[in-house]
Amino acid sequence: MILRTRLSPATLFAALGSVVSLGAQGLFAVFLLKLFDASAVGQFSVVSQIAFCWATLALAQSPLSLLADRHIAAQTAAATAWGQSAVRMLWMSPWALLALWWSQSHATAGATNWSALAPWACGIAGLQMSWLLAQSLTLRQQATAAVAWVRLLPPVLAALIAWFGAVALGRTDSSTLLLSALLGYGAGAAWLLPALRNTSAQTDTGTSSATVSADTRDTRLKLLHTLTDVAVSGLLAVQWQALYGTAEAGMLLVLLRIFGFIPGLVHSAWAQVVMSEGTTQRRASLHMVALACGVILIFALAVDAALRWGWLQASWQGLGAYLWPLACWQMAACAMAAHAHLPFAHGRAVRFSWQCIAMNAVMLALLLLPLLGHVLPMGLSAHQHLLLVSGFMTLALMAQALNHGLHRQSR
Image (cartoon, rainbow, N blue to C red):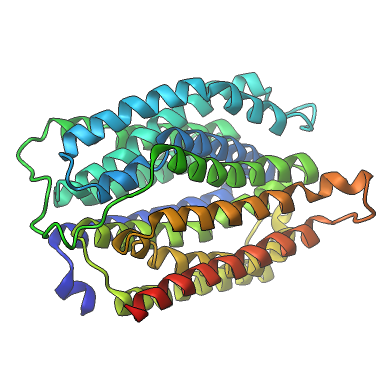
């Protein structure tokens, strides 16, 4: 009832698009587990993760600034953001290719060469960058149905292509998954062009300037924040495959894909739309946390049941060791995502970024810890390493969410 009475039609369309997108992501994850083996999923996951990091770093949080900085016309801000992001993407390309090379440096003899994967990573990154900007732009314009379509179309199309390639064509290698991602993001990126040409939508939805949030961070801080975010997510994928193999990387990344979409959904369908309206809703945010954690719990129980009842291929039997540590991590991420609008609403965006940078620095150190095995007698196994990084992230994200919630309550 709270969501229905307080949110605009555009917000409801955003929630609808995100929920359908969630269902498509879940279906895609089922296809990954049922129709493809762990090695194919691992290679796809690593390439798509590198592309995501590349696109995210090139954007430097431009989609978030597009929502917060409502004093700038939406079309002008989006066009400028895309141009600047494209330039950043170009000069960051050597680092992305280096990450791709490193991820394949310990691959088996039959694995795809990194140079053959480079065009996939480049195409997926560019289209995903445009799609992320299109989501924020349509939300700023309050473009009703477009807000839903731009969110749901890419994952729905990707799931259909993956299913058709595996079932109808018998193509169960990583190229089928990479093609599905490329075409899906392409469909989402297409929404950026008509959105930029749409001059009828207002750039402000009627909220007063006193209640509209703003991004007070400078470009260097946003870029540093994004760089540490990308370094963590990218190193997690690359390092896990390099240290523990493609199958272990597939198990880690497929669960992060299943669970990680929920905090992403909370951020896009709740925090971003609340930010775009210039409001703060603490009690409703707590309701969103409870709902999101419940969904993750249901997903975890479903995966656990599938493992126990032998519904998955034999190569996925090690998935159980990853299940609950990652579920707890992503529940904490939901708590943080639901309160992510509060730092911008209360002028604490700079402090928020420095908190995230510090948390990411610790996470990077934990991911690199096994490399010190030649110096220190630690010898971490994959499961021990997982417990270390997931435990830290769970505690850190919960502390950060509590900090924002208590600050809001005290005002």
